[in-house]
Image 1 (cartoon, helix red, strand yellow):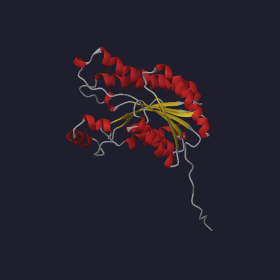
Image 2 (cartoon, rainbow, N blue to C red):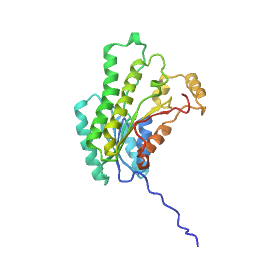
Image 3 (cartoon, helix red, strand yellow):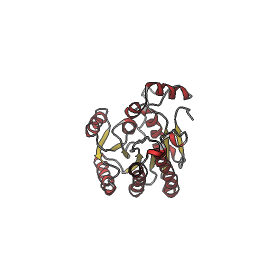
Image 4 (cartoon, helix red, strand yellow):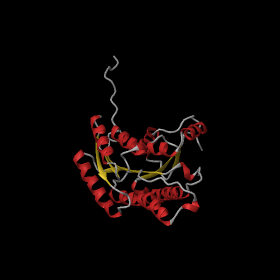
Amino acid sequence: MANSTPTVFARPLAGVGALVTGGSRGIGRAITTRLAADGAAVVFTYSTQAQAAEELVAEVTAAGGWARSLQLDLREHTRFDDVFTTAEQAFGEAGARGLGVVVANAGVAAHAPIDEVDGHEWDRVMDINAKGTFLTVQHAAAHMLDGGRIVTISTIGTAWPSPGEAVYAASKAAVEQISRVASRELGRRGITVNTICPGPTDTDLLRAGASPDALDGAAAMTALGRIGQPGDIADLVAILAHPDTRWLTGQVIRADGGLT
């Protein structure tokens, strides 16, 4: 007689602590929500949007997940130790084993022709995107359990550059190289490090800087006929965070619906 009891699938990240930088809005919000749905205890950082962070914690909690928020400006270099230590303490309270997943998502966009970029703008973008990601990966290596997963977020602009993106693309190219080197350095501990390069993704930031016609044009150039959704990127993060992706590391993955 067949067993009529429905199969119950364990959540793949149950008992895992995850830290997401820039996790309160846009792609970061979708990543936080997805990792929590997969069972992770998620601590996410935000820079200025405290209300959005509080709303996300409430949303995750209402859905049966676990999340906490921490304020962090990536330019506050001396605060990284405190953020990671506080996150570890929170994981203990949630019953998680420790830090198993880190997603370096926080960053800033920048758009200006090369001849209009001054030293201050160069330093600002590099400080947040390149150095901020470097420090995130550096501290992740110090705090992460063996066998962990690090995912960094770059941009399709490193492979498909557009006018006005010199500084932004340069900062994200640094993210990709930091990640590839980290994959070599951390591989002996079973820690994987991979980078996702999102194509045009439907966030408030994108819609603020692009006209509807531009968005339609970008959608038409993809193989799938649409621009990305934050959930598309979050789903890929979830795959890279999964225990079964232990043999995938040092990769730069273009998540752009076939744009490139």
